[in-house]
Length: 404
Image (cartoon, rainbow, N blue to C red; front, side, top):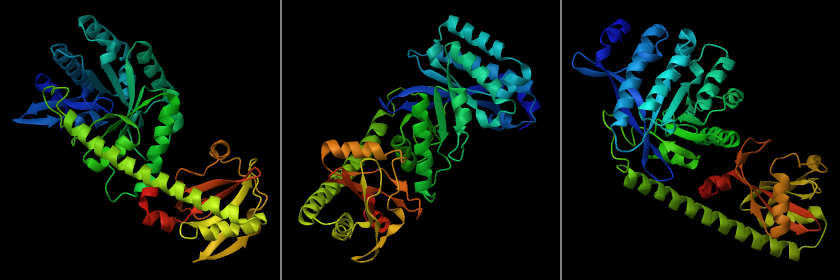
């Protein structure tokens, strides 16, 4: 796209609006404002124009101001008070030193009737070419002025969480458009889970964009997406759809996800109940040394387990590792005896829960340090401040995917 052609036809620039839905009420709460231009009988996206670093910052700023003005005017004519999500190029602000002008423009919009809580400024962090502290100052200034700030276009391969934390965004926006059915789903979910935990720790909401199918919608919902956006939900357009236009569709989809989650959790609870019963019977019947007991327990749960050991409440391993080498064939490995596992983040919490509940429990999914396999661990109190840990066989987990 010729930048000169755009700036010479700035009167043909128009905003389009892509709905943003929330997961709390299944309704449209706002719209991302996207630049379009009418040229030669076509309506073209201005995305390439804004993303092209060779386009002069002055051109981008003039087009941005035109889009802002039209979008706000349209929003003010709307009976509701939808939020407007504006894409902001931090490089343009830095190069032209026009942050003050941007704030002054929106202060005027505020006087015209646009409330500050209707405005969300979205920054593409990975494109910023200046110091991160400069961006931090911009964001803090906007937040102090009463506006909401989003870090946009975060990919699942982004690992610069330190910078995200420094910037203190209100919202983190994650692009799911690169998530395909063929993607290594476990790795992808691990990264999304880490981002979701990080967002919760810094008090930021998650906004998932690029949702193109049911699979991606479910992924967004599973990982705490408060805001949802994508062509699967609604394409950009020149008008605001009714805020409840997609409620039935989204509600139906998410209810189906909830039903699946309920069935999965019910089966997991039944599994824990079955293991509790098995452990209670086994421990009662077998009163012998710790190692003999662990071997007996491992064999009793042979179908589901591949490794078993006992720890005390301080985290010290009191038995050898008993490891399955074949059906009902178990061997002792002494290397782990005496090691302390309290450094594992979940360990003490799990111990205390078992101690007070006097029942077994199932850990979250994690990757085993030795095998790198995705596993879960079932644990059970066996008395005398001792607890047996049974690592579930990856093959068993794969065959019973409701455990994953």
